[in-house]
Length: 215
Length: 131
Image 1 (cartoon, rainbow over the protein chains, first blue to last red):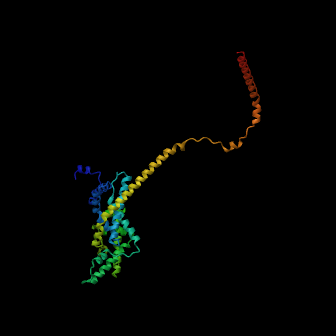
Image 2 (cartoon, rainbow over the protein chains, first blue to last red):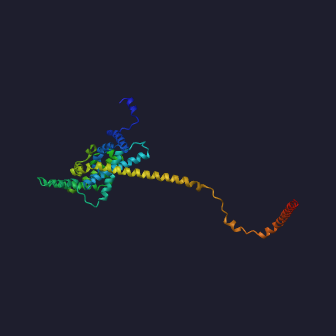
Image 3 (cartoon, one colour):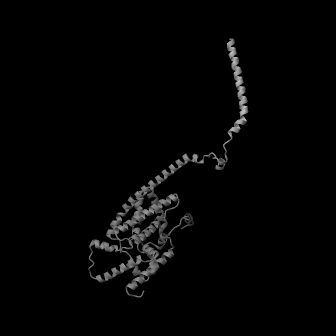
């Protein structure tokens, strides 16, 4: 980049992965939607729905729960954006995606707390039951052991300390970079990495114990 | 996941076991309905929001109008009311004494007035008789 170019872009903060550009695009779409442009809503929703769904589906007992959580996350994010624009008279950009992710994490956490008395059935079991799949096939024992270990590990994720669970879920389910996880949770990137590694270590210990190995 | 390369094999396996499978058909079907549901819920929320804002604006206008009407009477200077001590110290004036004191003057003035009237009336009568 030339000196002239550097000078021209001095006022902008460029985040890795073009996050600044995406944030700016989101800001424009949010403002357009709040001004009544429903096409902007469609674009925003399409852009983020998979990520939000990936975050909340671990806590959803049924597909409808996942859908409700996605709806509520978007709704709350739009209400927050409307309030923020009103308070600051639209002078500052709306960090829509970090808000949306944080709201999704909190909603999922609250949902899990409220539903704690229910024993969760993994969604693929529900899907499989609905499709009438028959698990009888060669290597069924190995598949059963693996299914049991999956159940154990998924339950272990839900029993992790809150911050570790949030970081792991955002990393594992939503596949977000640590920088974005940190922004969504309001922690530093290093802190997010530390929580992730603590969580991975706990899961490893749990798995080793289940297999009768030394953790 | 770039930083996950630092995981040991058992950690990586634990994470792969903990990972959820891709969304099934039922989930995708449910998710497809989420967009319309969110938009519908937003419209309702927006309508409620505007209703509250209008109600709040109406209340403000009503409060301002009430203030305009009530402010003059609230800020008007009220006449001083006699203090209870002053009222208790007040005595009925002695009317007889006042009467006696003023009586002589009143009686003299009255007598003069009567005399003037009688004299002028007599003079008028005489003038009439002479005609």
